[in-house]
Image 1: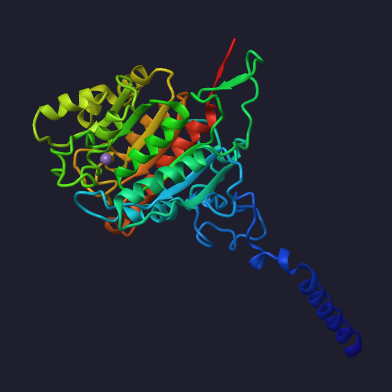
Image 2: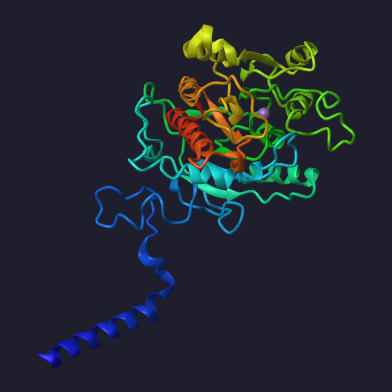
Length: 398
Ligand SMILES: [Mn+2]
């Protein structure tokens, strides 16, 4: 009995070494990296190695593609990208850790597969190629340089080839055309901030594909302040910060005047002139407290009437949510919306042409041990991604 057993062992050793000699380059570490990214749990016979609490963390366990590095030719339809910049903030710093925090808060998004019940879509199985591109390299030593890095990084992704073609309209059978001003079909970029300053370079990037854009902006603050009012502008660089970037975007003609809107506003002001200045920057306003009178339905209606069917850029400051639900942020304001209310309002944007989006001002160091804020940020983006997956960036041309 002993001899055949030894032979068997020797045969096994031979097989292993043959595998090492010839297939080493193809070997996956521990054989647990399985793409597509979709978690195999539940129902698979291997549940731990690919479970939501192990492995390297990307947004919603999406595949990591080095879009700004060795994979610079990779095509995709939606890219998540971090912009770890927080040297434009006025109160609590720490949003440079936002991208990694939001990724940690997103780990459980695909536990049950990712089907969005109210929107009746699974964005992860919608046929779109959705990837996590990691972070744009951003210097913490020079804001001017960092802002340029963010613009260049965003632009590099926005002008990448899309993985999916637009195809034909389901009802008419006619070919769909892109809604961009340059006539090309662009992928969508979802940026993980970073403090809100990052939206100035992002809008500069968006302009190159869509021209002046309608903005839906959820925030407790206006962020259209003149530099002399917000920060005092002791230098040109200090004049660009997380309270003034929309002022500059408006000055540069990046925002479509009259079809842009803020939601969840509740900040104190330097005086009523701040609202006059905000009007001049092209924004309508929905105050946070209006949820008590208009309800979520009324707020959704007001937003949709403002932006119409125009291409939209969506910017979400986590401080639009009440600090009871999302405490980990740079400039918290009480009296905000609940996570549930913001998610309902975002689902109400179903059908709009959201060309790209961000979530900003997540500063994980101030979070609870239960990761309330990073979880809220991730879940909010799940709604945004679901809305995007349902509506291609296209129009029917007769
Ligand atoms: Mn803001």
